[in-house]
Length: 572
Image 1 (cartoon, rainbow, N blue to C red):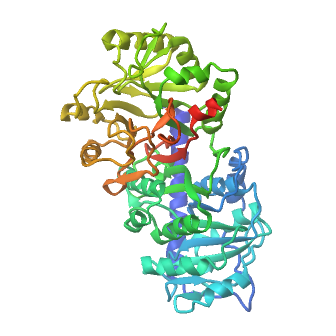
Image 2: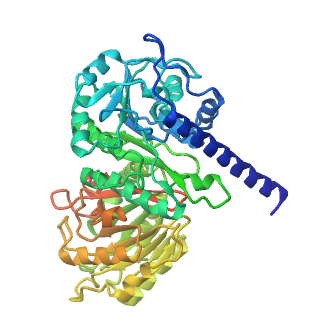
Image 3: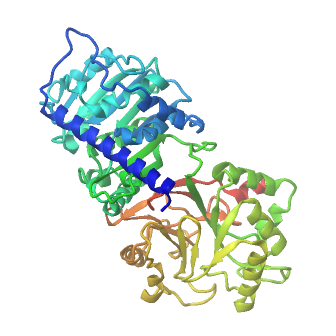
């Protein structure tokens, strides 16, 4: 190891040790110290003395594009070891103004005598004062059986770590801080959520201050993080309730209330843009780590710019594609292909796209070919795949061999000549950040062979490196059915037991409406993406695109994006 490398590793380790020591010291001091209130109705004094903790983090994210659609909530850490992640969340929301900010935090030191605590006092910070929304707070404190006014916030870093960022990005906003007791259960969370509905409106940003998996080595924390991410992706309140504290998060209640309020008040869903672990900040093995998540909540529609850091890894998956039959006829019309490409790239922003290619690519498609034999002209197919930035196609489906082995060979030759990667039945394709495995349970069109996915084929999902996500791109199920049968449920469980990260399905020509977490959240299943570019109208078919964000520790966040019917778009 070079002196520079060794020195850099030692510097990172020293920073982690110092930051951890400060955190432990502050925790011990805050836990042991009695609650003391400032005199009269004066502000709480600044909890931090060094403004560069915050200004450096703010500068680190300044070049990232904020969300171009209004956010209604964010989830950020409160460990200032990752102050840049806190800044990332606030910065993403900074393109819009908010009058009120609700902060949901754990009561780290068990100081509240009731289930929840708040305060009408303001706060001084190293970057300037932050004032409380006293009118809103009085409405919350009217629920006196569960909410108390407390001075615990003088030492509660779950709130204090938010305030300098809040002052910088939203200097005119007032706050409603809420500390949540570990004793509160789901019924209590529901009552608090109902009380908060009285003050949360379109000018309110809900900030969930939460650190995630605690006190575990990184290889164990990664699994708990993935479970949490999949429950968030599914929007499952039951699944979130089942998460364990602190294995999954230091405030499951805050996560639950955030998710419920976002859904019920705004129709908003999460977009997770960061998941890290404190192990990444040390070159030495750390036995007790903490994980961090940054999530943005919004009613995201077409045109969302999807805030991302330069090194973020995003992939997109879409369903059935065939450039032949009636699809060919509309794509050759003036401007139609360009219109469809523009619409798709507005979603993917030219990031890698993986699709299920149904049919055979031929230099010339015979006119007499029947409609159930899918073939497409090479010039059109390759041109469209390139324009759509397709990084890989799955050939594990029931139409890849419609013209037998020779037709399959023609398809491979055309794709290879164009530099487009492909993977077939049981084959693994290693992309930069994840592994794709092609699987089909349905044999060539017209064949009576089904149930092709034997244990030996499913074993192709077994991979050694837990830090590389494994995605099963599987062709299965029944046409025009959005739910799996018991047979597909059995197959999905067998894939889960082999350590797959996500199951992405196709063949039914209709799209699933939600992501399904399997095994307590170990696996994200999207039973069917439906159609992407296929000659079927909306009355019979539907399609979605899957956005997959891959984080450096090997976890993923999946987001399902409904698609228009591109066949009908081109037919108009």
